Length: 202
Image (cartoon, rainbow, N blue to C red; front, side, top):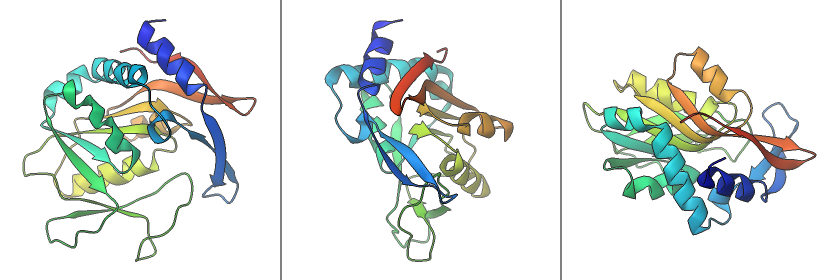
C-alpha cells in the first residue's frame, strides 16, 4: 500500500456513522466522511494524488471540471493539480434562461425543492464544453445519472465521471448505462464502522 493510500484508509476508517431515511423507507447508514467533517493536509494531498492518477486520461480530454454541490465543491482542492476551469452545479435556482435544471435522485431523502423535487442547477457550461464530472461518493448512482442524462439532453457529453469513494452498486450500475465512470476507494461498513477494503487501479 502506498503512502497516500494509507492516509486515506486510516482517516476514512476513523469517521463517524449516522443514519437517514432511505428512499425505500428504511434507515440508511450514512458515513460522515472527511469531506464534510475535517480534512487534514495529508488527506487533501492524498486525495489530489489519487484522483489525478485515476483520471489522467479524462483530464486530458476535458475542457472543464464539473463539481456538484455541496461536497463535490471540496474537490476543488484538485485545482493545483488540474489546469482546467471548474464549473459548479448548485441547489440554488438562478432563474436565468441559460441555466440547466437537473432533477436529482438520491439514495436517501432530503428536503424538497419548491416544485416538490430535489433540484440542482448549472450555469457554468459553455457551448462545446467536454465536462469531466467529479464527486466525492457514488452510492446508488442516481444523482450522477440525473446529471449525465440532463446534460446529454442539452448537448453535452461527459468525457468521464470520477468519484473518490464508491459505496453500494452505483458504479457498476452506471457502467451498465455506458457511462465512463471510475471510483478510487471502495467504502463498506464492517460491524457498523467505515471500512476500506480496497483501492482501484489508477
